[in-house]
Length: 443
Image (cartoon, rainbow, N blue to C red; front, side, top):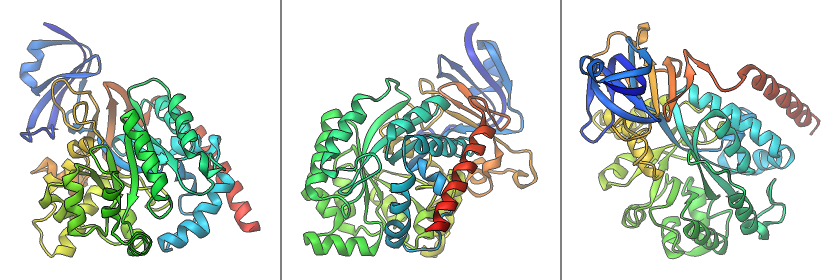
C-alpha cells in the first residue's frame, strides 16, 4: 500500500472541474505533500492508500477552492461607509478622503485579515488583490495560509503609501524587493485606471511588470463616464488606448470591462489579455452589466471578482455565481445563457487560468495543489440534489462551506478557522470602526 498524508473518502459528490468535467459519486481523494495523488472511486482507494489522516465526507460535495480574481481586501474596514452613490462621487467625495486619513500599514493588515476570514469561510482559497501597503496584505495572506496575488497600487496623485506621485516606480520597486519569499503569495502591480494614471505612468508600470514577469492589473471601461473621459482625452476607446500603449498581453488583467465595444473585445482576445467580471459591484454602483455571453462566444479568458467589500458589500463568491447566472439570463431573455457549468468554471478553472495559475489550481486533478472546499449538503435548502453543479450555482450558500484546505493544509474545520483568533480580530475592527465613525460625525 502507498502511504499518503490525507485521505478524504465517502464523498457524496466530487466535482473536479477538469477538462472532461468529471463528477464522481461515492468518491475519494488523496493528498501527499500538498498535491492531489488520487481522484476517483471510494472502493478503489481503500486498497491503494494508507493515510496519516482519514476524513469521511458523507453528506458533502468536494470541489476546487474558489478563485476571486479582483478584490481590494483592506477596504473591509469601510464596508457600508457610503452606499447608494455613483462611482465617481463615491470615490472622490468619500473613499479617497477617508483612505487618506485612515489607511496605514496597521489598518491595511487588519482589513485584509477581516476579508480573508470572510473569503475563506465562503469557499475562496485564492484571491487577487490591489491596494496600498500591499506588503501587509501579503503578510495577512501568509499568516492565514491563503493563496494570493497582491498588487501594489499606482495612481497619479498622492496615496497613503506614496505621498509623492512621481515616486510610484520607486514605491513599486521597494514593494517587490521586500516581498516575502513564498510561492503561495505572488506580487503584482495594480495601475488603478486610465483616468487616474497618465499614459506614461501606465507604460512605465507595464514595462516594470514585464521585466519582473508579474501581472499588470488595471480597471478598464467600468462606466460610461470613464469611456467618454478617455475618448475626450486620447481620441480613442479605453481598449484601443491600452493596445496603442503596448499594455496588453497574457499578463494583463483588465477589471470590469463593462463598456468595451466589439472591436475592443477583439483586441483583448488578440493579445491574450484577460478580463474580470464583477457583477454585483457593477450592479450596486449602477455601472452597467458587462456582456458576458459575448465574452464567452468570443472565447475570451475571464474570471469573477467580488471587487472591494465597500462596493459590493460582501466577498461571497458563491453568491456571485448565482447572480452571474441569473442576471445574464434576465437581461438576455434567454434561460440558456450562462449555464451552471459555465459559470462554475469562471470561479474555478477559468479563474485560475485568468491569473496564470491553471497548472497549480482550479480543478481537482492528480498533480495539482490540493485547494479544496467541502460543502455540507444535509440542510433543507440542499435537499434533494439531482445535479451537484446546478446545486452549487443556484442553491449553495456561504454557510454551507464546512471544511477548507489550501495546498493540503486544513485552514477551516467545521466552519472554524484554525490559524488565528477570529474573535480578537473582530473586536479590533469594531474598535477601529468606532474611531472612523466619530471622525466622520465631526466632519
